[in-house]
Image 1 (cartoon, rainbow, N blue to C red):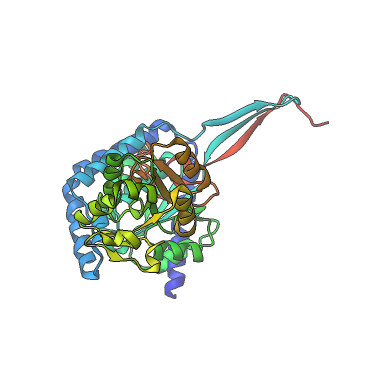
Image 2: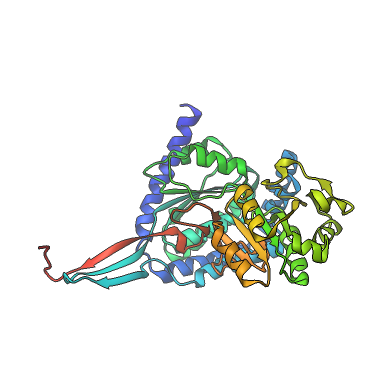
Length: 421
């Protein structure tokens, strides 16, 4: 048996078990799903030391592989991040159950009563790099939305992912739900990723969460539909009517809070009117904070900046690096973002309603913000409890993908012996 054949047979077996579990989850009581998530949260809390010990093995493996500082930060767990996983599970458990929600209903002159009702998608495949917390987030959101899930975590996060997955399975068991509802691919074999991408009829949608290499591979090779974003090239635009102190706070936070997440600012755009009024203070703040600012024109007068290369605009650094340039008003910012953006998240800093309206109307990124840090581009911060990822496509899910975005819908039509003339 070849490696590819063996991987295909493993994923097919997991897919069949997942479809059986999904059929049961589709009508599982909301209380049972919430109980499973709360029980899983209890187990994560109780097994913190085990999970951290498993994560220590992953960190050693990641260091041996030569992962970047940003990737190591994504991989690392500590007491605070374990507490965040627990909170995320409890938050998702507490949310209204989306399955069965009546989205809309209406009556027809023929006597028919029609309801559009949320329903699970079926089986979700999640392929992710580094972050072991995605194991909990993805498992929780898929369960909440009545979907079974097959998780394939990054090779470097296998030990912590296994430990967290065991807690999720324990929660399912405690609530009397099928344990196959949340499955974890058990090895680092890369052939299993390809098998998931080809699993038509077994997996209904693939969600990749990771770097450009992973997402590009999935989008290119998947025969299963995909929810994804390729890159998080997020822009912050300081308009001429920006409040200086707000702008300084937001720009620093957007770049430096966590550089390795997809919502980190990668390019700062400064309106010439802002520059004429306040100078290069925003760039000075970034340099003082240890950011390598790759700039052009007048911004290069700031000590510590370096000249931007052409490909620095439209680049996802995921590091303490960002590009910066002066633009001519909101129209200049819009033109730049349309050319170099990835339709992820953009923020305008302004007190001018007209400028904000133009920015938000004429750009088509999944998330558009005003006077707020792009680091808020996160399902938890949107009140979703957690997210599987950010979707930048225009069909079905867009922006943070939470439980509601993991549902489809069906029509329930009621008549009274009604026939069509």
